[in-house]
Each structure stands twice: as structure tokens, then as C-alpha cells.
Length: 477
Image 1 (cartoon, helix red, strand yellow):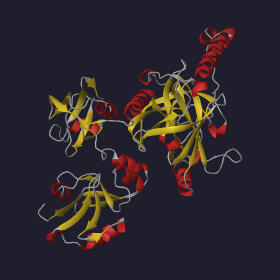
Image 2 (cartoon, rainbow, N blue to C red):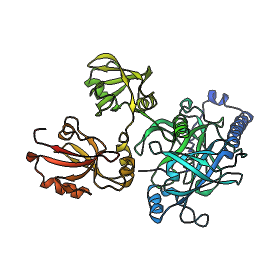
Image 3 (cartoon, rainbow, N blue to C red):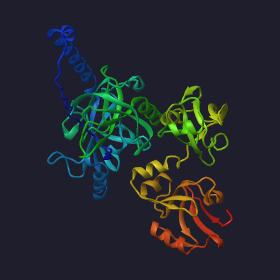
Image 4 (cartoon, one colour):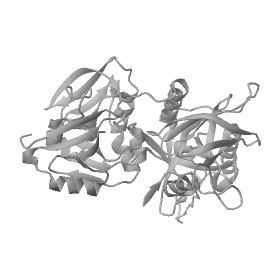
């Protein structure tokens, strides 16, 4: 199955299996008028919630830059193709939600990616153009500032508490699927804490509410009419809804939006540790008495965790908050205050420890592997040097502030391996091997086949931001 970051809509089919009720159950059945009353109450709840949010759910038209950009959008986001006869071939459409009366819109980053001009249309027919926007690729969110008059007061929606939502709770998805404006569909929360490879720095709410092409960036709301998610992706064999949609939780979206509005970007704190969920095998292997916590695979170089944590440590809490899933630790650490001490409780060798670490700003390479996976590019393992590499693409280079360069980007170094010992770090761009240019994977392989570790291998590398360096890797390392 392919996972596509798109907008959506869904059809729920209920299969009723006939069965025989015993006399006792039959006697306790709800009278017909009681059923009608409950149905009417639910209908009224749907109606009231929809009426509160529909005026603030806007259509976003992205006028794309070039033919290549339009083709790239159709490959990455097939559902954002414009239907015949409605828009220009160079347009793509999605949904957004007004979160401020002065024209601030929250949407998905992929809705407005590559746009040369962004047009926003309200359900009441008013149209505005974006005067600026800022985005956070880590969560696939973007904030748009509309060019509105000072006297304009626009409708807006409020955020609800996504953590308070439970599996089985009713939700409504509002958007513009297939350019059918202001469409509302109903469903439930199917699951919580879903992790998607394409969007690394958040977990998702799963829903069966109908979402289809055109719903991306639109709100998922509770029956109070509060935003509890931003519809972002579906799991589908066809590219259209099959009852499995994903919404970025409102608590995450609100935190990201506030930072973008206040600072123009998202500033995250960084612990710098690679973790994974505890398995039954880990529990037995480490002779753990509890099944809570997350397992440390290894700390990253030059991170706050490098000296504090080790392989097979089990993190139980951060700043007093229990940690039972990888995304929980990620959420707690990235929002921690920079330059201040934060408490971590963990288990090592069967004993319980408490340490204090000072959080650092997250470097631009911290989420690099996730962004590369999202680009669906192939990696290459240099086993001799203990390197995981990938040929640089423009999105990766832009992230590293190395646009226009060529080479292979270091995704990971094996702890204790030759490359790590020589000083190779994640995010470095390898441009030459022993003086030979390596713009492609095949060029790198050819150059490495001619290199001799016994004489030392010289790598010309460029650090994120542009500083250049030569690193020599020798046999004894």
C-alpha cells in the first residue's frame, strides 16, 4: 500500500450481521421514539459543529511555478490535481482553516509547496491573496498571512484538546474534496499515536471520516466545533479514500503555528538520542521489571545525550512526565526550554538513575533521515567506512543550506566505525574521494573502488552552511 500526503473524503459502509435476540434483550430494546430522539440529538450536534467551522474553512488555490513543479506536485501528491474545467492546468487546490480574525490560515505545507502565488477563497465568496507564508516541513504545516484590509474581520475556528480525544469519539472532516466546496463528512477516531515515515516530528490521529483529494490542510473537528486535527494523509491503494485517514493532532499544530507566527520558524530543543519502542525480547534481555519506557539505541554525536545516555538505557520519564512511546519523548524534548536543565529518569543495568541535561537547539541535520525517506531516494551503505549515504537532492541541499552543490550526503555513521572516528558527521556533503568528484552514487562507488584504505582515503566534505573540510580516513581507525 502507498501512503500519499493528500486531501481526502471517505464512504463508510456498515455491514449489519443478522442475529437473534433473546427474550431478555428484546425486552430491553430502545423504543422507536427513543432511537429517533437520539438520532436527532446526534444530527443536531453534527449540524451545530459544522455551522461553527464551515465559515472559517477556506479553499486554497496554489498557482504553481513551472511545468516541472506541476509534474512534481502530481507525483508527490496525486490527489491535488485540478479537475477539468474548474481551474487552470497550473493550479492545485487544497483546504486551510482560519485561526485568527485578521487573516491567518493554517494548512499543510504540501498544499502550498512550489506555489508562485497563493489565492484563498472563503465560503462566503470573499477572495484574498497571501502576502507571505512560513512553513515547517518537519510537520508538513504552513501558516499563511492573507492580504486583508485593517477593517476586515474574518471568521475563525478555535483549537480543541487533541489529547482528550479517545478512540471511538465522533469527528467531522471539513474541506473541499474534488473541488466540492465546504463538504462535511463524519466518522470516528480510529486510533491514536500513529507514526508516518513521511512526517517525522509528530504522531497522528487516525480517522475513518471521509477525506479525499482537496481535503489536505482542512480541519478535523470534535462535536464542540473545535479543531482537534489537520487532515494530512491517507493510506490507500487507489490514491483516494479507503477509510484510513490521518490528521496531525491540534496540540502539535497549535504549538507549531504559535512559533511560526511569533518567530517565523519553529525552534526545537534537541536531546540527540535514537530510541525505539521496548519489545518483549528487550524486556527479557535486559531483565526489566516493568514494560514502560523507550529503549536507547545510541546517542548522537555532539548532542546533550552523548555523555549522559548509553545503548540499552531505558528512558522512563522526562521532566517528571512519563515516557511510554517514542513520539512522547520526542514531543517532550523538542518543546523543552533551551539552556535550562531538564531531568531524565532511566534504567541502566537494572538500576534506576536520575540525570540532568541541558538542552541544545536542534541542528538542521537532526531530521535529515526522515526528510530523505520522504523523498523516496535510495541510500547507499559504505560498509568499509561505516557510512550510510544518499545522493543529494535539491530539497535535501536546501535543508542543509547547500543549494546548487553536488555529492553524497551522510545520513548516519555507525558508532565506533572508521568514519565516525575520523570526524565524519551526519549532514556532511561528500564532494570528492581522493580528489575525484563524486556527484552521483555511481561516481562515488567508482572512486571508492580505486581508493586504498592502507594509504588513507581523503574525503572532501562541505558542512551544513557551506564550510569546507578535508577528512582523511586511515586503516588503523
